[in-house]
Image (cartoon, rainbow, N blue to C red):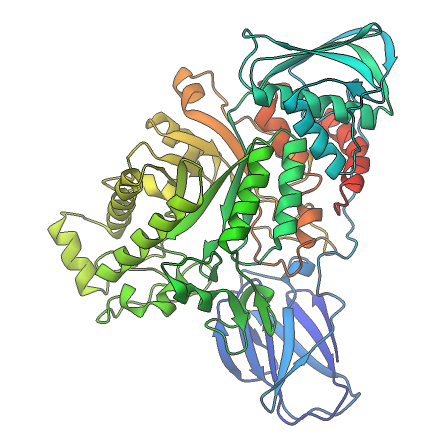
Length: 604
């Protein structure tokens, strides 16, 4: 059955062509935000952007037109990602799948990139400095007996660049040098031979990646000279939302490989949100009910899940991902959600909410009652149980506790929450959230871990405290304030680092636009530390790219959104202050097209 959708000004035009007669079918679909039928078809059910419309009798092979509009008149369909996703029909208790030409972001889009001048060294991120010599040296393989270079060699072989080490290759001297910064290296490329100086394991690993990349992209004709390189920031991260869309383990492993090729070292694993808690925890077997969405599941097909979609990560999967990342010099930071973004958990464990509550808080995603109540003992039982098992599963010293997007008026209608606020002398519900985050952070510390949280965790009194690492997303100013307040900060402003934002304003593009339209150039059109303020320099420890999966229905849709803009994230995390230039990044983008292709990675 064909379901054709298109943008028609402020509305969405849909044409449904059934292949059989249907008696009063129900159209089920998901959209970016809540919607309704302008034709007057009755809305039977809605949850956030998920909608069910009662249709009249339909005739086989006869086109049936439907016009949709968003509830909030300030929204209009922006591009293909804003059209209905995961659409299907329910007919006489049977699911009938629909085929849509606008169903996927894998389709070619109209994103174009201005050409840029290629730098002397085709490697991203660009090194801190390059003192060019005379001439070039032909290098196709290198010979070196070093375990960290073997790690680099294993990565480049797996990533499609091919091995760069061979017993028959040119000799490469690997030399320990304590004067080189952590994660840094120095490469001396001369006609007489090559030398790699490093201080630590990751320095040698990154030096090997640089060599392998240069050999691959320069076709074995390396420019002679001296490369001195070290990262600007210790935290060079990429986030992936696996709650809205379940990614296969292999897709995550491939993302980790790409990150390592770009010298990124932190993977922020977002596996818990309103829509799912993806990990299989022995201590909470009931979580299995959150792993799938769709017909007959705890939650319907929100965010393009269709009639049924999802999955979970076992302990074996977690170990596989963590071990793979560790071999690449990448730490995996897990994130749970306290107290908001918990719709599935609230439905699974209703005793985490006050039965006497009469409030109607609504999240920005359009969900009602998606916040666990810190006045309820069962909330703390769930949170502590999750922290306990997560602490055992992940070697990373950090656990991200969430703490973002508390809906307005949360807990105002909860007698239990109001009593708790009075007992703890808390004035606002933001204070209650921060008190909750502080208490959860204290428990995290008691498990031998360190807490992290979103920027909202710092806003109330008391704030999260406990030496928490703060991730700032609403804008750069929030990060600067948190840094001035003494917090260690990872900058990830949505206007610069959210790779789920559309590349362009074109209707044929794909992605969201609430934060910004983010071109490749825009990813480096800022400085995480804009002022020469020693306190800021000390407290802003890095940057991170983010990919949220609200409109992702297939793993590969993530690829063309992340590439090539992850080049900008890598550049900003590594290169010295003021060094990135748009023309250089564009030139590297052209060169890296071949590397992405070798990795079998879709790109815009």
